[in-house]
Length: 158
Ligand SMILES: [Cu+2]
Image (cartoon, rainbow, N blue to C red; front, side):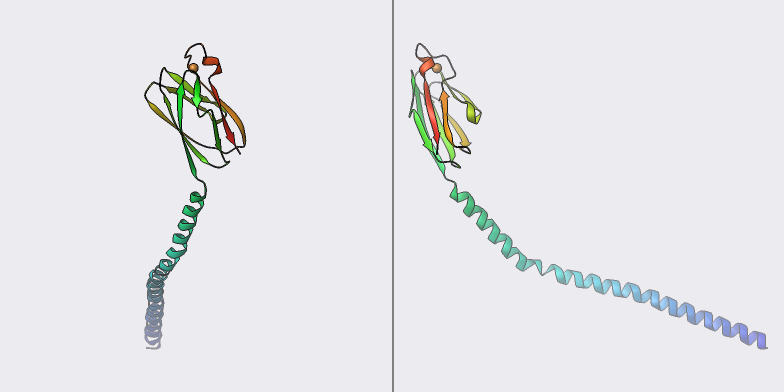
């Protein structure tokens, strides 16, 4: 009889232990969902964080507004460019709208890696940033007659 009691009491202890372990294992998952519930609550906090990003975007547009675009209409004829001298400031974005009014010419501004063919009547747009100071020569790059060799101009970046 004592052996039966001891076996039964052992079984009861085992059941209790399993029950406690089972409960403690159930408690772990219940704490995890609550932590997962807390995370979405934190997700709502980035909403006010959107305001600073909007402010930085405003700052960026303000910075780009500082550098201006300088536009020039340039006419190519035998044997000159008009205007022959183009003045801009360092950092300016430069847009040249170049048109030949007689025969095919070319526009070569080597220091800014620009080379375009100018067919008569067509306007060719050239855009670049004047990112270095100096005086840079441009010239006609398409043979256009007796004065071709003297058909030059200057870009002055101050
Ligand atoms: Cu030429």
